[in-house]
Image 1 (cartoon, each protein chain N blue to C red):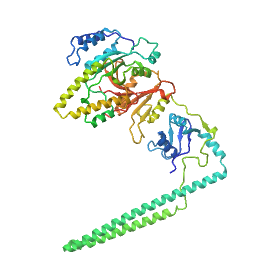
Image 2 (cartoon, helix red, strand yellow):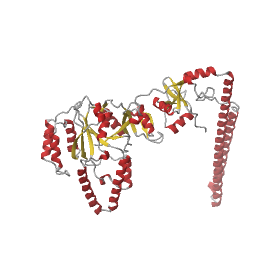
Image 3 (tube, rainbow over the protein chains, first blue to last red):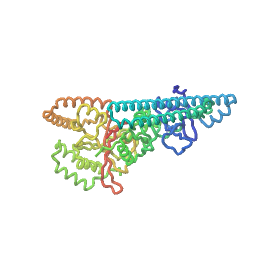
Image 4 (cartoon, rainbow over the protein chains, first blue to last red):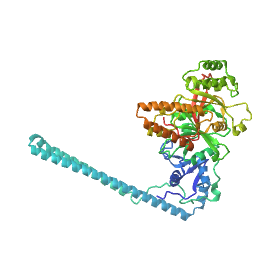
Length: 315
Length: 238
């Protein structure tokens, strides 16, 4: 898998939000830069779906800003890029792209059919094995009965065996008919292709945006220095609304770790309501997390950020 | 709310009462009267500080309590030019049992078969606050900067030493009854390592308790305590 995308990764700015459409970019940024974002794509048929979401990945402005400052990504005015890209697209390119899609679809179809084939063979082998085992058991039983010389059960047995044989024949026949039908069904779509919907638009459109399509670094809330500092300290940050805070700080990948902190940012001279600190401390302790409050001493300087963690003292 | 309020009549009564009948359970009774004289005599000590002090002394059963006046650092002074009269007081004392153990420290103790009861009790600082008081990160940082490094105060060194000596004596008695010689070694090892951990902040940096008094909205004079630590210190898993 060629999973490392070309840098800088284009982040699409659409209607006030920052999105990533390429799965390679998403995995790369998560793996190398601890940026998780939030998956936000639903199935077209189930727009109210709220679990198991897929691409595109939505980034917080802080995440987008951080990536831009690191030089890993750039912000693209996606609407403009799409319009200009489509206008610049020539007929030959279009045809080529369509052919490309078709061949991808055919490839996907081939993969699917071959997998189905494999599964079918697997299933048949299992049936075969079961049949053989049953036959062997029946044979053993009859020989054993004959050996012991018990008349009545022995007389009953051949019927059973015959029934079994019938059953087996039927099942095998059924299996063969179903397999026949499936093969005939599968055979039909050979040559046809699956409909492919690529997540990204940069096979026909250029990958790197032109200078006119680039946007400046995203505007970020005042909590950005704290975000940058925690990120630099190796924490994975995600939006914290679910836990009643600004960010959730995970000590490692959120798939592997529980979060350590409920993070709330404040300006250096901002008046803190002590009740909010107590509430945060209590809430955090209740879910086995710390409540972390912090801010930058010098404005917009991540190095001057100081943080304080609060936990219930238990007395 | 933050202006220095003189001790109420009740507060004065309580403090004078406890001074007369100082409990004998205190490990260093000689210190006690002097402390309380300073407490009640100093008009700068706010009612809030005394309320928290009393809660610590009588409800939480802390010992060797002291009040410290905070000399606000240059950063804090710059911000609080408007209310120069406002002084921050800190209370320090020794809790009846260990209040906070860093998760890694706990692991270290478990590995060596040590229990929290085996360790000497440590002096902790308490910051009295009242609901409705406004704080800022600057002020909080100022308080933390004023805290002594490694939780040890120079002025309290002698007392701390006494405390340590007393505890060690107890441990020796314990170890005579059981197979505790290895335990004493473990303890020594632990104290050595703790010194190191304090330098590297492996088990967290400076910490103190934030005491908040409920005085508004039909305040029932509840005092709640929160452990506040400097820096991102991973939470306990209790």
